[in-house]
Amino acid sequence: MWSPRMGFNWDVYGDRSLQIRGGTGIFTGKVPFVWIVSQSGDNGMIQVTRNFNNPADIAANAGPFNPDPYAYLPGSVPQAGTVVPASVTAMDEDFRNPQSWKSSIAMTAKMPWCLIGSVEAIFNKDLKTVFFRNPNYQLPQNLNVAGYPDNRPMYGTSVPTRFINTLNSAGVFVPGGTSQFNPVIIDNAPTAKGYYGSFTLKVEKPFSKGFSGFVAYTKSLSANLHDGSGDQPLGTYQGTQQVNSLNTPALSHSAYVLPDRFVASVSYRKEYLKHMATTIGLFYSGASDYRFTYVYSGDFNRDGISGNDLIFIPTATQVQQMLFNSQTVNGVVYNQQAQRDLFENYIQQDKYLRTHRGQHAERNGGLAPWRNQLDVKFMQDIFVKAGKYRNTLQFTVDILNAGNLMNNSWGKVKATNNTSILAITNANSLVPGGSVLPIYTLAQDRGQMITRTFRDVVSTTSTYSIQLGLRYIFNN
Image (cartoon, rainbow, N blue to C red; front, side, top):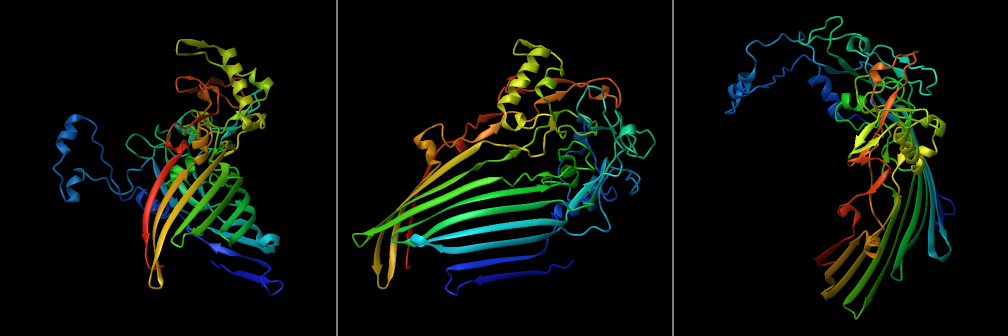
């Protein structure tokens, strides 16, 4: 795998008053090693798992610990390959490490009032990326129910109608078996669609006469097929929220890239009385804290995994046509119409849902509210000279989330109440091309019907904190 690169740094006028720099090239990375290890540990050929589930077995096999590992083998060890685990991991023989094409261009210029301004743009494009697939799934069929707008693909209602190869309870391949078999293949995506881009503006004031500071804004966008958050290939594969099928995930927002961020800092240092100096600094950061995804509770498309099906966001008219099962919460009965009205009100108060009506929710489409955080630092130096060196005793006070100290409603962290806002209750009754409509129940939040997207996090993450410090700096 080749990784050619080039870069430049051009001092336009030869006096560093205007510099343009940039570069482009191909970068080769690696996959998490635990994913590679999985194809060794989860191949069904080198592990025998024993479970002790009743008191007699536990008593007979519990300690003391035996350092001889063979002591724990069953009396009759199955021949390798004769017992198939429910999931195995393999790597495609043509797999290539991830590669991306990265390019950047930036300009830095000296400005009036001794300021320095810079502009930078970065763009990355996937060339090779990790992709997970399960070749044992049957082909799904579109729901295609008359009068229902969500036409997502649906799998069968039983293991034999969902998987091509099935297992019996003993872990042996049999036609029509009742146990599922999930082989996950680590492969490269058929087409590398992922990308990342950012644009940054920054103005800074270098340290002069005691003052220094900067202000910067970054606009970012990024998309991928998998977030890669699972510690096992199976977890990453099954945990990717989707509409179509797990083998055809859609390009969507990356979980770890936020669209906008402001940062700013200013500090002032003053020496006086020949042996003292005081420094005051402020640091501001403003951004959304995280992305999140709206999914159904339960297994809507019957692929055998709960909680990974993106919701369809209905229009106001479609909400009033939805079917709900009545439910009782804290002694209050919420019938179909009550849940329709609550769901409509929930959509109206949620910025993401109300602007994407008539569409499927996007993976990582939701954004936490914008949060401003201001941190303050105070430093008091007392110094003396010992020969040609300065020795300093320094006291520090750090106020983190200082805005919350000034107003207890500022700087609070928000958490989502429940991102699985609808539960499907009759998934197994849905027939592709049939007439049965989905029936739902509206989600609850801490023992009540859900009404709001976010709540305040009641912990020290939402409050100010003060840290005191003392250190001795010698011979500087």
